Length: 478
Ligand code: FAD
Ligand code: AMP
Figure (cartoon, rainbow, N blue to C red):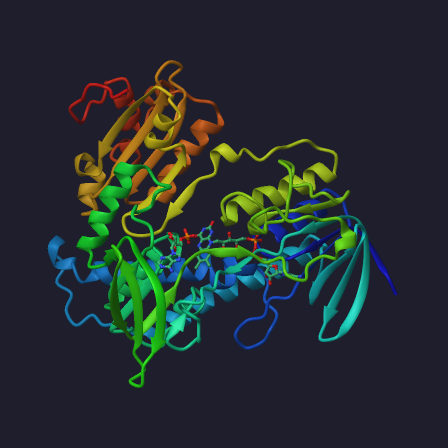
């Protein structure tokens, strides 16, 4: 029997479940299909983000940060001796957070009357999805179909994942013991976060990165400060190092071959994490008759409204252009549900915050100084160091900087960059300011509570016009 819905969503990650929930709230009948299974083979909602991405990685980052910090309590007068790590208990904590949130998605779908369907969805034509659960197929009809299949780790022939010694990001979230020597391929967001986790738990971490530049997408000043800080923390980040081969030897060690300045080198480690990026998960998702097209990089081709080339078929999240971030996918999912309901919202792609959850965290919104200058845009910027922020000093956590960049003529905020404690939270102030079209002066004229980390944002905004109070103002750079 064919079931009919107003909307069928394929994928229950952040992009898919957000679309499904919002569409149901707007009065439409919705089915949401997902094929994700946990390590025991049980269906689990929430996609990459909740199961093997944002949430478990942050659980490990937070715990490992606390562990690392506890070893320096003596600096602030707390004598804590004999602190030790129980990795099995850490993993249990991480798994319980994941379970709580993934089961929460089930409750949210149910509470909003979304029909959650276990299995693999296939777009057979513009209005027909076929689901397959262990060979049992079912046909679903819908006027609107939303594709939200997410992404999967990129595999490279020079480091084939064996799930034992050579792992991807998923394997790196469940080591049963702390590797003595850990290699990481890729100094992107995921490589730096996972490298930080195991570095803090005690691994000797070497990160091999093919590019000569460190974090080229971040503001250059922040990237430079962060690299220095991560190196001080003990992570050996080798830029310009292209991995060409990885083999497990008879002793169970991973021997990684890489070229640096045209010379071949080897790195021997106990575990190797391959963190070289993610690819859209579009294999066997739609038939050619559906008229959906992929772009030249393999992402589902969509316009700014997330409409594909097929009438009534939309695609959202990691499988379409733009940054692979959960919050970007959620906003796209909600936008599509609203547009199907006849409303006209847009996603503001100029205001997508990026965060790297190292310690200190790195976060930014808008453009970097180098990209604006490269585009010939005249800017003024203000910076403020956390080492001059009372609250950061009180918390013994005063490494980093805030930079606010504004258009030299209009004073509109074009970017905010934070490297420091709670950068992921502080950057939201820049996102809100930019969404509201604020000038740096608007932020400068706003009152901030004292003593707070947010005062660093205030001072950086004041600094754009050379009016900072708690640091010496330098002539504004254009
Ligand atoms: P996904 O979350 O990948 O969900 C897609 C779902 O669709 C999956 O459940 C999949 O099984 C299912 N599916 C696919 N095809 C089908 C089909 N044919 N039929 C049925 N079901 C199907 N982002 C952040 O914003 N912040 C972070 O801190 C962050 N940390 C991360 C850490 C790691 C280690 C990783 C790997 C990623 C991280 N990300 C983070 C990225 C984030 O996880 C993704 O951007 C987000 O999950 C994308 O959401 P999505 O809904 O597009 O896809
Ligand atoms: P991201 O896409 O941000 O997750 O980052 C992945 C990083 O991995 C990029 O900076 C790539 O340059 C890097 N990378 C990809 N392949 C290799 C390789 N074979 N050796 C070293 N680094 C690599």
